[in-house]
Amino acid sequence: MKKMQRRIINMRAREFVLPPIVDGLVLGRFSPIGQVAVGKALALLMTTPFEHVPIEDDVIGDVLVRSAILRKIDVDTLRRFVIVHVKPLMGPEEILHLDLEVEIALEAAGEAP
Image (cartoon, rainbow, N blue to C red):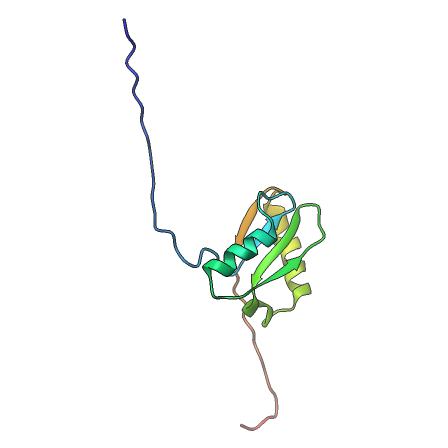
C-alpha cells in the first residue's frame, strides 16, 4: 500500500520597497554581512549618502546612518544612543534597521528679525 504525500506551501509576497533602509542600520559584530558590502549595496540602490560610524563594542560592530542625520546630531551622540538604547535589543549576529526622528528646538532671545 502506497502512502499519500501532501505538501503545503505557504507564501507571503510583497513589493520590494526602495529605499530598503530609512535612516540607518546597526550591524552586529558577527552579522552575516559587513559594513563594506552593505555600503556598496546602499550606494547602488539609493542616491542618499550614508556614513559609516564604527563602534568598539562586544555586540555592535558598525552603524550605517544617513548623512542628513549626522547634520542634526554629532557622531558621539549617535554612538551613545545606539549603545544605550539599541544594544540591549540585539545579538552580535543581528542587523537592525533604524528609523530615527531628530527634533531640534532653537530659541533665540533678544534678536529682531
